[in-house]
Length: 315
Image 1: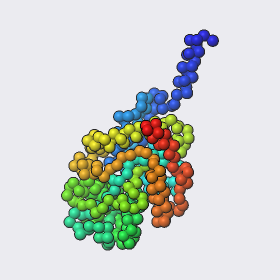
Image 2: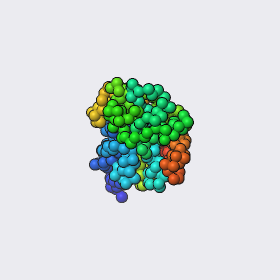
Image 3: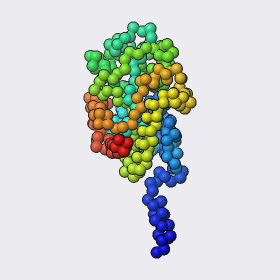
Image 4: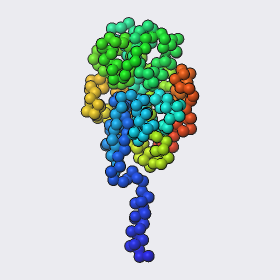
């Protein structure tokens, strides 16, 4: 066979073997929440590889984001660990491949209220979003203080409505997610009661997840997306000004509130052994609270291979 023809066939074969993510016109759907700790996906366009377009699909609640991953309405999603565990415990197809963000929680009370500690919440109206990561943390913190949820008047309030509910007087306090606490503080309406990170679950919050079929069938895409996620997360932490401007432009958030919120936001990406331990502790806590009927199959729920590979490649 002529050399030129062999070279041509070799090039064609290599092109066919190339990962699908390099094909022109590939669109990846990324689910994200309308919260500052889900800001990394809104920075992805700075790092998306040639031939890939990442479309960010916003969701109001963690459960909506998880459901989108389960139904493949999105290819990847960033949402709270609680929603992920709820799905995995019900044997829904969701696999955690990385971390997304830690911290970003706060217990906030009306500024003039005589509420200085969690114990002062006894008998008070407290805004809580059911099924959220924050709910699990506040229940554990109440237990640590010798209280239960029955000692407060739990009011169902979405994260975006919490600062408004506090300002109107609909609730005396809330267990919120940034930038809600930042909004309440910067507007002079609220005060921080505590950041609830003293439990064995630490400051664990949001995960980076996908459908298990995506892991099995498109591992190169998983690797590429986790790399983009890492780059965006590290960029967001190193360039706080850009992060704030992105949140203002993309999510319509208030700059003054973000200035207060950002110190309580830890964007990250790596699925560390510590993260896995805390997540398992979290699941056990949910089981004891009867929020789930059984623990997830951790062997399928967690897949640290891609995170470990990425960490080693940059070491």
